[in-house]
Length: 175
Image (cartoon, rainbow, N blue to C red):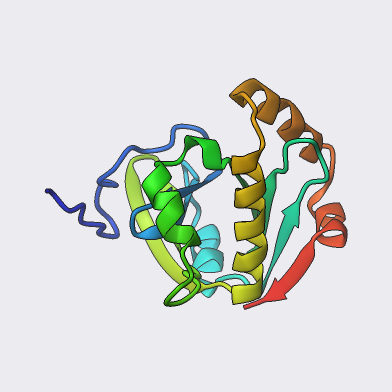
């Protein structure tokens, strides 16, 4: 088994997101957010390294519950939002993540990418209460039969809200 080595300033050792946006995934190691910012500016890198002071968790009130996170990084980086679909994750990763017998797995690792190059890594412990809300949404998703097209249709409803509006709708946590 080959282990990926993540080194700042080097090519990202796993599949690189092509779209300029943020993606959340659940890996064997835990929650991961990849932020793709081609042409990354120095000020954006500094804002990422300073980190966020607050974040939001929101479960949509739709027939297919959508898990939405917003991490409020300082400007000029600004807030990033990600959504999570448990149906596209390796089932054993989900089972392990939901297992809280020893502890709530609350570590989330952010990778900031400039094209194929890894520019920064930040690992943060989320509030256990936020992760428990996330677990509840994952369980609801797993109990709800749906196709990816249905998920995408309900997901598009989130994009009608601004970040400020999302912060009024969701539960805010401080780092």
